[in-house]
Length: 351
Image 1 (cartoon, rainbow, N blue to C red):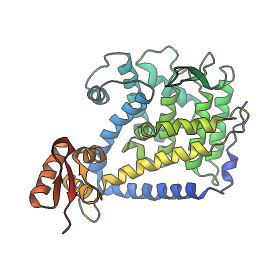
Image 2: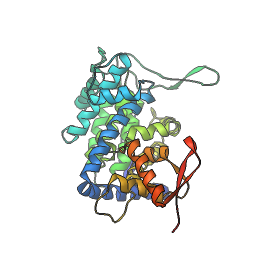
Image 3: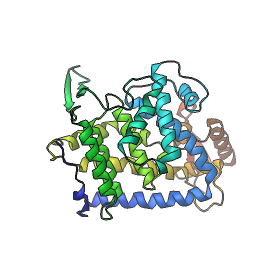
Image 4: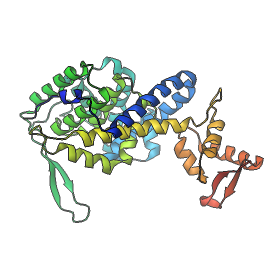
């Protein structure tokens, strides 16, 4: 049985790269909180976009998909699910909304973990929603080249799951209250242990991402409200699963190395903050308008940038607005067009 003990995090001797990324996260977190006070309207728009992206990508990682238009309609409550996949998507929407709205009142406990799982799977009608697994569940992977399957990891047995979940929660509470332990190091350790237990028959991956957000929000790292944490995981999916595999080796014997998963988790979190920082490329202006943000995105790009690139950087700004502003910039001579059609890009004209 795995021994849940996070006292090793008290050491304080961290690799330079880890120290650097933690410092950057804290700095960008403070900057974000300051911006929330000044640009509440921008954050409101970003939150709406991020919610749709989070629902999309957390489900997409598990192969649960529908069209972008349907996801927007489901997240915004404009339609009922058409099929099973959309029922799963709607369930994640509800669980995510509960965390966004009530995280201050949702402690990390077995009761709340089960409840979030129940909310997530309720619409899809699973009879085992909110209940720990009754049978063992190996994690299977399929080789994309040969088609052969193998067991990637043996999670905790069904019979031991209740005890290990209890120990996980107690160990977290103990470490959470230890002022010598950095919460940014503790959270990924807890998420890794949850994934290694794999306490539910289905939905463990999606629930691990919800729990990541819950623990981050409760520790004042609310970036996932405005930039999709799940999308960043999806972008680095190969790295994520590789880190998870490396950190799970020897887990049952309490000999695993948490470092790979901690680093990947922090890189993903840092990527979220960097993405948010891109939305505020304007410095020194009293009001960050959409036009100013588009202009700054072009001016700050060292290489020619396309309309598609700008839309990706500023997802809360409509393609029509981007196109109109680019047209104005070309007409006034501040940027030049390079290429034609879909290959058109824009570059700042040096004065």
